[in-house]
Length: 56
Image (tube, rainbow, N blue to C red):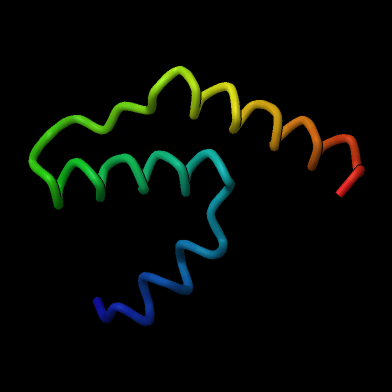
């Protein structure tokens, strides 16, 4: 499978599937489990709420 084919498939995935893939790739590339700090988790929650509310 080519990288271009993978990119096309990734674009069609749900945001949750894309996030799961991102975590997998980070762990694959670094060799350590991917962990967000509590601060980043809070920031992501705020940004997600802003996007969902249509304020952006």
